Image 1: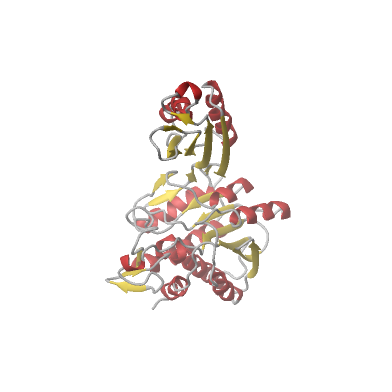
Image 2: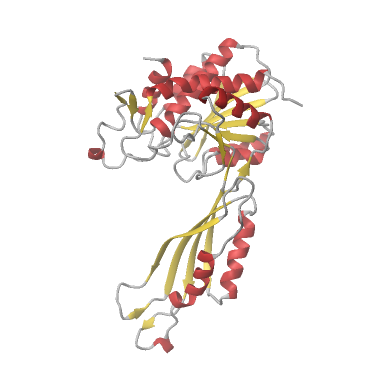
Length: 380
């Protein structure tokens, strides 16, 4: 069994359902300490974070990942136990194989190989791992980034090992992500009998014109490689369950995935302006999940494109699609951020998996990225 498969299996065996790390980071720290890494355990609330560094000064390159996984769901739906890593027909199955314990294992081994080959390398290489990526993400990289800001910790480049590939390892290079903003809207009315509507105020009727405008609006036409901003209503609830009662309140939950044409603050102002214009009596709670980030052309992006092209045989697709990642907390520190990882076809699913050949190739891919970035000068 190869070193990356062995380490991946050791991590998969641990029931690290978010935010429980279940000892995964201690396994990584023990390994990296043997290679001269300084390992700092940063715990916020119930979340464990590992910051492991080797070298000093600039440039600073961070490999970013998470050890927590989503719940496996019904165990009897799995072909094999989700926390017993199992290889069948050249495929490794288990919760976290694709998202993203195998990437974490590959990043760890890539860094070990890099410092073994280049013990006196210039700059700083680092591994940052959290156990709060699949959950609320309040006490993970978000808190670590705030600490880094206080310390003045510089990060030049960040490579996140999220499962970014579509069909073949290395066929996609993620160069940015949309922001995410969630609104929980309460529309206030007056409860009453449906036969006496003049004695009540139906919040559903009052809110519908505003909701229709929000849902139908074209927010923008996109931004460079970003798709247009999208608002999706995900939940609506009102009423007592009785057909003869006008409800006193309507609750609506919606989410926006937005490109750099907007900030969360501007979207909040725009949406509340629409609600007021329609005369809606409302209160709203906003949850800012993260601002969009985008890495323009530069040393990181050019290097990744070249390495992935050599690896896959064709230039990768460069994309900003998908959901969010912890890179949204690192980018505001001034870092250029990309995402490179395994095929994402099975993430969060029953029988989550990764091809063993892809897993065994991952450390070499990450090592090539690290070496090319740290040991060559950017073209001027």
